[in-house]
Image 1 (tube, rainbow, N blue to C red):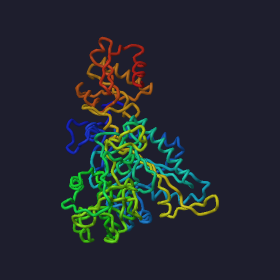
Image 2: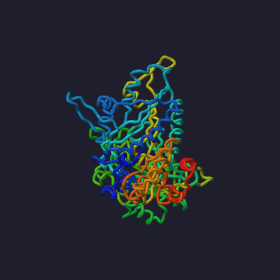
Image 3: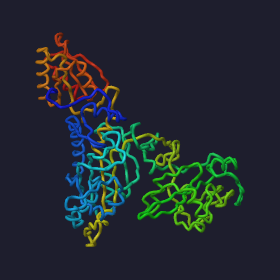
Image 4: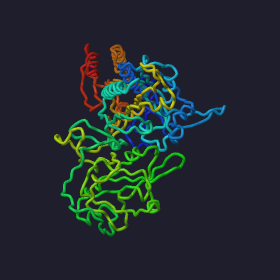
Length: 579
């Protein structure tokens, strides 16, 4: 490809709204153009990278036996209403009507469509398992699109869906996809972690995310310093925390504790570690049709409630928010002195939960549901009807649940960019959309489903966030728009132009993707564009050609090497470009 005939409008200035290097470089390098909030045109360079990413994904997906389809970008709203997500999904779902007043949505995801498709054609267990995937446009009406292609409203996504007759077969395919995704991201040259995750709005269980490690990432992930364990904060676990201090010894009694409405003041009052206190966290759960209820969570005073974990324990809740002091007092409680004893009788609340690590815990201090008083000597092993759940947020320094206590791997927090997510959906969508099959005994059953997504356009940004310097992008050979940039220092020098053209044709014949920079631009401007665009290698044909030399540059570390021109020069360049 001659650069003079190519379309790659580069910019010198940084875009005003570009906070990440990936956003800045993709626009400055002529890969994308922003045409609206969170909406981008992909220019020829961007398309070349996208196509190479797509090819890697398709190759690995096809190896697993998955079949590619293309589903409609516009989806009937009736399917979303049938699944119950039309109202539940929120304002991120773009809804509209056609000229006949029929309702449609722009698909942010395609569970409903694929389930309707399979339910229409697959009727027997003999036709299972079946896995269909697509690489297609999606739209999510993000309230704050940012970071360029990493969080856009319109985006390219690979989404796949598998259908099974048994849980065992669903788990098998889930594991197959974890391996396939691992190969994909490895081929893309990414430093990533497979992260235990919460299923979120899509639902189901058995959820894992693929996180690219980058300090610019929006997601905080918990990683072990000794093994491959990694998890999002809403799914992270730890070895049960053990006390570092002796427990306070006291018989069960109510104790006067004036002005101790915080864990800090309570710990100071009794001169004890906050590990031995119980913290009450009161939230308000919001349900459909405007209903709400107070929810009470009890955790150790040294811990923090994870809001996502808390939401997941409340069946039917769409959101949890802070409960006001007025709302707490209206049910007969005193903020700062809330405890579990008689709480159900006082509030009539069915939503009272304790963290798992409090099961059978003793020697605790807890609110007495009376202003100015706490109970001491609390023994939870004597209490009946307590519901224990995983509620706490893991902190740095906690022990890894995978390593065990012997290896003592410690957890630390880092940032990541989510580029893939796999789910075991179960029968959530097949039941809702009445997609059934006959099993080997002739019984009607709902399909068991898996869901597997990769943010294809997001990958451009994620890859750059791991591979850039202060001059521009640094693409790997596998996905670079071109492998080699042949730069002519002076296009008016006929010797330089003729040699560069012959070299260009010879390298093309050897299968090397070259861009021939024959523009009438200054040499410095051509080098700046080469470095900005991140093409892995460059050959400089300049004044040294008179001495029988050309220059070979590696973009990764900007190392330069003189090569003697001669009969083997093409083979030398091919070897270096494929090393």
